Image (tube, rainbow, N blue to C red; front, side, top):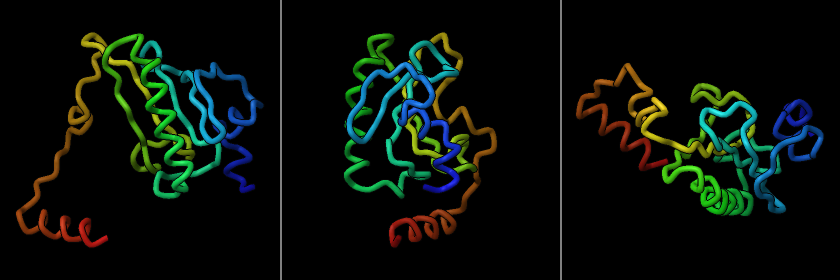
Length: 141
């Protein structure tokens, strides 16, 4: 067990060391209400194994995580008919707790959040050559 898992709040919730409003649970993942919700019904789905980034997750845990997301979103959608799914994958993306987690955030026209593109005020100005270079890096990876 690494220091990260010893101090990880999500690992503590998984181990039932910290109470949480659990919505759904499998052997490999856990869905619970966010302690600091952005909207009514804001929930999180986490892997029970500590992974910092999505690309670190085993295939089995990944399949279970997203099946739990699929099953939990049906529950969250009872609050509203639109739900934002968000994953911050690394510190620079806004990930505050370095343990893979999927936000399920009920949305409404009154929540003032807007579409994902509204989060970014500085949009890149890329030349066709820069776009092609980026495309080649992504495609060949």
